[in-house]
Image 1 (cartoon, rainbow, N blue to C red):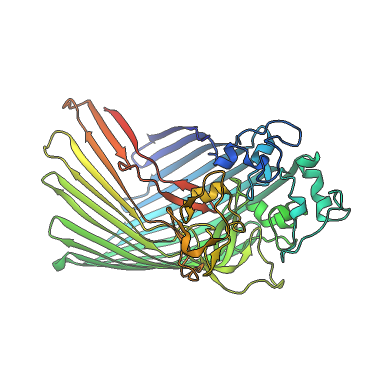
Image 2: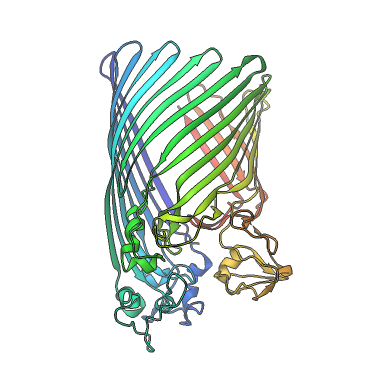
Length: 599
């Protein structure tokens, strides 16, 4: 519902040979996309105004029919990158380049702002015009001689961020529901529902559209400067390959940080057994995400945004760049000519680890910073090169994404010295125990059609706020989920299933509570770190038939490819109430045809 969009791309590269030693290159790109924000049943049917928040018969405070939400976004991007390459001698190449990229993101609310209200979720309407302009200059010199392949370079760039936002409250119950950081009601309305002078309600009332208010403007700007220098050497000697490097970053944005970053990688080729062993270490500077960086850093110090962002204090919470120690060990093994295995284990230990928060349930996301994170991961692939027209590829991975409180930066952070929670672990929603993709392809004849089969298995990402049982019963009424969200998660209580408009009975006995789409921990076993709710496992299958040269042409070729995605029409969730992307189902059965002309 409400899920249309389009995208246009234009790209060109120009190369000009000035002389035998000099060449000039120019890359240019432009992209425009426009898309609607898909509606839930709540947003499509304006259920908030039909009794879920206020019993107003589908009418807004002005007596107009609310109608479906109509939120849209537009992104425009252009990129220009010229460079000059000079061949100094047979061993040395010098490059000098510049770049400028500008991204403009526009978010448009519904024409009737009251249509943006979603029960227990979005209580604000908002619009945004945000731009990011990244410009800089880079230079490097490469030198190859004997066993060495040396490269040294420098890059200086500035990122200009401009954030122009407009906010307004569209929930008539919002002011009456305000609470302090401990959850105690603020009681800043009098008996007639009017804001008491000098209170948070009085601060917000001018921007409460249900009380005749207008939109609140928030404008932010920052100029982020980053100077990066590096030197690296790839050394090849016999069966050994060694990569050595040192990088230095000097970051200056809303905060400043300098970091020296050594890197080393070693690989050894055991030729007798067709084995390659490898290991590496890298120190990496983690700079804050740029999306709504000013809003997240300064919003809690703004008296109007503070309660809208659910801040725990009225202090600004700028980010401190993080740093990561990253380790890799890997193995590649060939079994004859027809089977190759490659596997790798990764550890990432990050201090000041970044994630995203979200403004209500709106598409406005902002960076936040946690105390630290630990991410161990395993990845591998098994491939079968072409054997009499048959080829195969099997890839798999497993990742655990442990993040740790407290939140140190961004909206919602607890400033140092103000108390707050201790160190505790939880998992973010790209944590998944196992996933794999198997692709098989067969072409019976050298010239003719080929057939492909794809099998994807996912054990399930960590899910959002799913009700769990402590052993007796499940309080669905207090879970904060709307009937539509209970329906999205496939929840049931005995033989009763949630619908988009009818919630499950509450409380529901634990023995009768479950889900067809989410794996819910057994009563009393749920843990944000050890055993969180997850999306249910799923198997998906695709089939493809194609011909790369339909008419057996030589200079000009026609190709045709027919694909069936999710051929069993499996109904499954990809994620549920993800902080960054909301709720998505996997693609239903779909058929596509692609016709190509090659010249």
